[in-house]
Length: 207
View 1: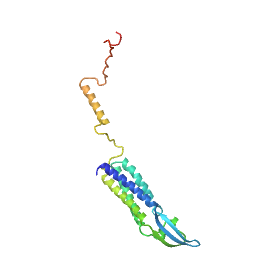
View 2: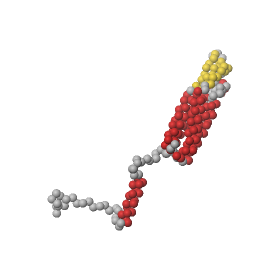
View 3: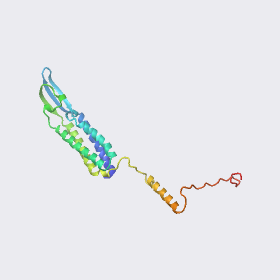
View 4: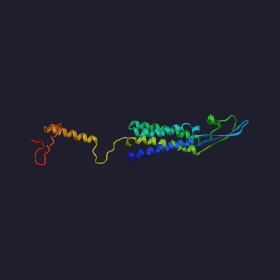
């Protein structure tokens, strides 16, 4: 796979990771039922952002990494890949922890009630989506760390086939100046323009 395709694959992977992590943060991970005195049974829910607050920052990191990937090269790009890979591993571990049904005291403070916990139901879909986002980050991080040097950098100048670059034009001008000096000519002298003549053959000066 060539450099532009590698870069495109990395950018798409980061976009998909950001979408997966953001979607996982919006889904309902936990549903708890509490037996609260004077209120009866109360059902509370916790989203992925409540249960695992790290998901939202890592989604934003994936988007920011796109700019870093396009703007850097060399060791800077490898550093971006390392950060993305570490973030993906962290996101994966935190997302997988949501697959096991947690005890009621594992709920965020805002979701806990002063009473007796009757039961807690944990979703499987949203943690898996978060884990997928973490895997994508890990994959992109490894790809950038290993093949980042083969990816083109944003802003690099691409010229049309057969079109001379500015550097080539400058080199041609320098060679012309040196050739004129070698021939004993003044390269700064402008060629004299021919004197216009009138239709009757005179030089048009009136003399």
